[in-house]
Image 1 (cartoon, protein in one colour):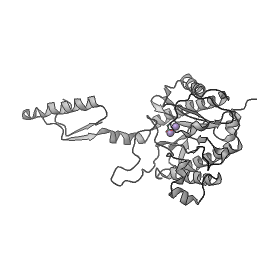
Image 2 (cartoon, helix red, strand yellow):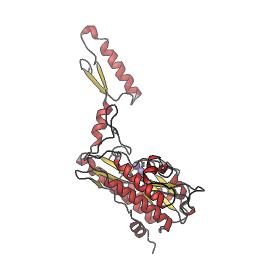
Image 3 (cartoon, rainbow, N blue to C red):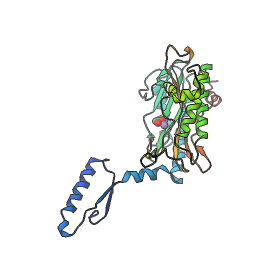
Image 4 (spheres, helix red, strand yellow):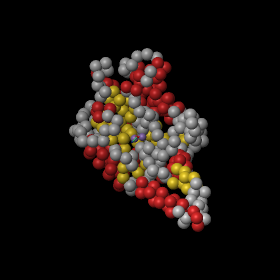
Length: 322
Ligand code: GLY
Ligand code: MN
Ligand code: MN
């Protein structure tokens, strides 16, 4: 009854095979009534293309929910920093995050959390979280809660014993500088890729300073040499899904990267992952760092709305043991 005599049908084609079958059966049922003068829709459109586009721009209510999810997630990260001790297992820190998320009324984790001690941080999708946290190592935590359906996505990296070593600090400051450069490139009208490019250039300079690579920044960027130590994109849309719906390129053949607009929410998450290797300075072996925050594009630039301890001084202060 709903589709008879309508010109077009909008449907999430291929999303749910049972629904696809029901839709096909309904179309055929209407077609069978052709001699009775009923017409089936001649056009069938994929509804998701339109809905996904609508999801790119968040309204004030959505942004408010995302801010609350971010505040709970940040509290979880601060709690993990306060409770961290050498010799604990990674899952014990995961439990601190879960505790804080649920204690504050979040639905739970928005995605499988990563708690990666030492060189485990160099494994991008490490989710086992079952190893002991060694003294003198860093730990990387990528975790965010879901609240009223909306996700937060935060990564912090901090020293298990509460104090950065000089080498850890050098690497950390490079990733932090890359994140700051990236955040400065998030503004209305900028290409989606501009902030990734800004992060990559800062990281490439850092790789030279750390004696991981040699050559000019341009050559390191053009040759992709940096990808040995930074192999992922600098962020993604965030919303109902942690990797939210929405295109990254314009919807036409040969389309460019999407231009940012006020109300879009995305992550900014540069990293540096230094696996042990003969040509890598020994003190850098196994250092893996990512710093991830969530931002909303505003009319004048962007606002970082995740607020977990981030500078070396802030982290060491939160972790002080005296
Ligand atoms: N937590 C998933 C991501 O950072 O993309
Ligand atoms: Mn992310
Ligand atoms: Mn993340």
